Length: 282
Ligand SMILES: [Zn+2]
Ligand SMILES: [Zn+2]
Image (cartoon, rainbow, N blue to C red; front, side, top):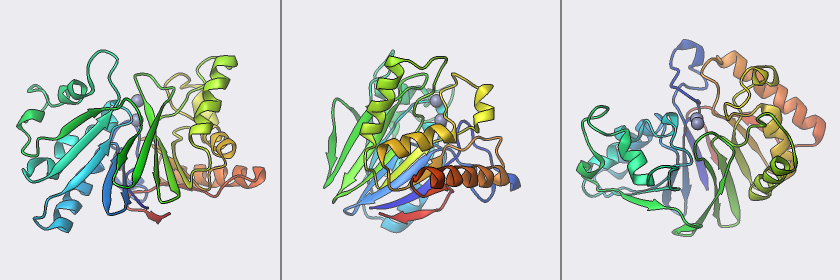
């Protein structure tokens, strides 16, 4: 499996000189497995991925399998700018879980209604397929599982497994909200089981512990929570992800260093802060 980060920022795009090194695009991760293109989330990072696919395929049909973990704006905002959707020969499938009030397709269509965007999903030349997940799916030789997470709105994490390797993508995992208790502990344990032994755990880790105190219940984690999860799950590597838009490159360097120190002290996995353009082979 080859992983490439196209967008690593949470909440809202944050371009500019202060964020140039890690990047300002919102979540999008490409997973190449067995020659197939799988994509986690369609934040603004997906625009450059789409353009790269168009160049790479040079007129040949583009097949892509797009998994949406969460339909808050930052995770779907790039979709209307995904160039393969405007090519009739593309084979695009979008996967997501049913929304709280409407089907997955209608949730995605909402951001493309005429007040917000000039092209409706049914006008896209590629005529993408929408799959509402009811269980794990298989794409070629890759198995994709999902697990519900604790975040406002409906959110799932994905686990991509291919040829004995696995990557877990947790766009926005659990917040501690205002309590710890039996229910929350059980849910946390279930998330750790879902991520068990992942070769790479990509996890939303927006805040420092100090920032979290003022943003409790927003649905985001601290890097300490995420390290806890990685240690419990025995993940082989941890990618800090969904960086706060207010964090400049130096702040992310500091978070990465603090998390790496904490991990070393606990015998945890190697830790790095994801940045746009970073590519890894698993
Ligand atoms: Zn987000
Ligand atoms: Zn959200």
